[in-house]
Amino acid sequence: WGSGGPGPPAGGWMASGGNSGMRGMRQFGMGVDQVLQLEMVLPDGTHVRFGPEEWEEAPGYIYPKTTKVNGYCNEKPEAEENEWVWKECDVVDFNELWMAARGGGGGTWGIVTSLVWQLHQQPGHYHMRFLPLTTDETWKAVLADEAKLNAIDETVEDFKLEYFFNPSALGVDDDDSNACGNDSDCYPNFSLPPWQFTCAGATVCLGESAAEAWATAWRTFLTDGRGKERLLAGGLSGEQIEEMSGWAYGSDWKEQAANFFETSDVPVLSDGGDLAALESSLFNEEPSLFAVQSLQGTPFEGHAASNHPPFVYSPPRYYGMTSAIISIERTLENRDT
Picture 1 (cartoon, rainbow, N blue to C red):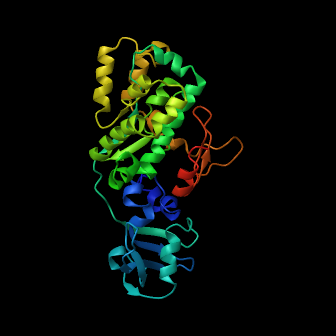
Picture 2: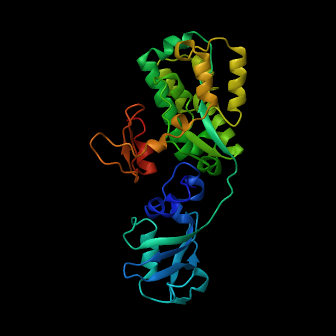
């Protein structure tokens, strides 16, 4: 559900809500949903511990709704931790503090000194790939055609919207849809340098079932869904669309790519036919290629960096990015504009 190291999750990331599309937020909920207990030092120096003690079912939500939060004060904060004495107290409205501390901003309400997380088993971790592994010379002309190139790019983005937010149209169940996320670190724009469209941190799926559902759904989208209509309107032929339907790979992408390199002398879609460079970009998953969230703090020139979502950053070597919170309904209604 999260992606930070041992420090950030207990600090600004959690205090700002714990928004993360990287490792299963859509499946397990936001970071703040996983907090079971907090310890804080309040502005007046009081050391408190608090957490929910009563809940009720909340239809439509992953977790129950908290109805009562109890708090305890440390009567011996100057002592060693094993000598602390916790007693119930009412120095603050703990129900309000519980909500505020998990999303209401960094050190606004006090200093978090400890917290207890709810953990989850991660059922396998798969980077989804859009790999145009082809030696068909006709694709050189296709990718040199701006209209066709735009149609391909738009189709990829349209597919992701369908998979994430309207999965039933692809025959995908909610569990497999919600197991995939992380649509931020690499935009699969086919007009970018070759390694960019093989950069597959674009989507991460948790579990082999979701990984295979992703690849199957892409084929469905291009053969029976909106993708076929969009690509035909963009000038691609039925044969080209059929080939593209095999360009999304699930958990076996490395095996598929390795087979391609073993049997192909000059892949059409590599930079100047540089097979070694393309192969290196696929199999050496360096942070600079597959985890450019680390560049999130790179600001516009002359501006201070800020990593709090929604965020905007523009590392000139790669591309600019904007993150915004938009309703699913609005997104689907305006997907063609």
